[in-house]
Image 1: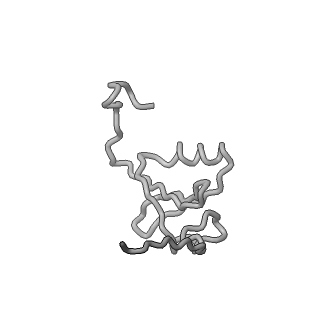
Image 2: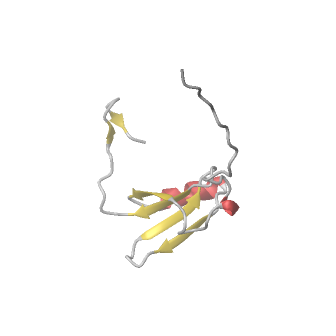
Image 3: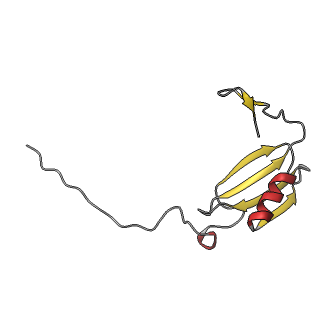
Length: 96
């Protein structure tokens, strides 16, 4: 019978959970979402006191960048031409 071993290693966290430990805006992973309007996004961020940065990209898209509580960078891109989901297909109810 072969002998088996388990090695437990303590290594630095490859995915830091603080903004200061991240590589910085544009040098890290981010998740991007398209929205019809940035207005409700910015209003919600301001209401909750979340720091954000608003930019217009070279593609002329308006975007908002901010970090979630786990220090993941999120990007919301305004696209007035996208089709808004009109109803919840599971419950057949309007989306709020």
